[in-house]
Amino acid sequence: GEDVEQSLFLSVREGDSSVINCTYTDSSSTYLYWYKQEPGAGLQLLTYIFSNMDMKQDQRLTVLLNKKDKHLSLRIADTQTGDSAIYFCAEIATGNQFYFGTGTSLTVIP
Amino acid sequence: NAGVTQTPKFQVLKTGQSMTLQCAQDMNHEYMSWYRQDPGMGLRLIHYSVGAGITDQGEVPNGYNVSRSTTEDFPLRLLSAAPSQTSVYFCASSYAAGDYNEQFFGPGTRLTVL
Image (cartoon, rainbow over all chains, first blue to last red; front, side, top):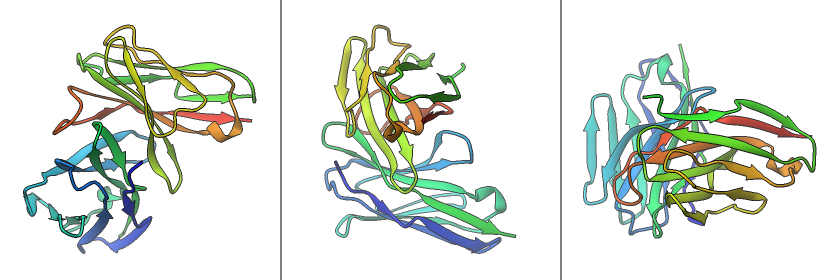
């Protein structure tokens, strides 16, 4: 399968910015996604970026895409305690299968 | 709409037992899939279906069977449970496979195999 890599843990103070990083392998991915998983729940789509874009901003969320390095990041501005969750990046690889990263557990310290 | 529903929420099995995890969606989505989530490994695709009557294997299909007799339902069968199948299982659906599509996830089934 595809390798989608993320660091496992991130801890930030409330009000600071969080940056979650992801590297992927399939350069043909048309869209790349960020999903959020709250404790005891399934995943919910947070945001996505089309592969011909470098950046996408959506309120407190900024997605950066570096296609040359196959690197995707999610920046959350003014991080709140309600942002504590696991964040997954995902790509659709050849064969229309989703591949998810290992997930980054974000802890926001009050 | 109920979205994607899964039953049961929790299940404990003994090694060798069989069971079926149920998944249903009421959004008329063609694409459905099953994932397992294990600590430090993210979500791994078990099986998926692009429409009624069509199923295919994902990344980790061994020990699992699926069928898709209707658009709404996509059950996952464990034929002979093993401790290695202890995991949280998620069902997901989307309107179509490929390009942009949002996957909608069920709440998950937490399975323990003793």
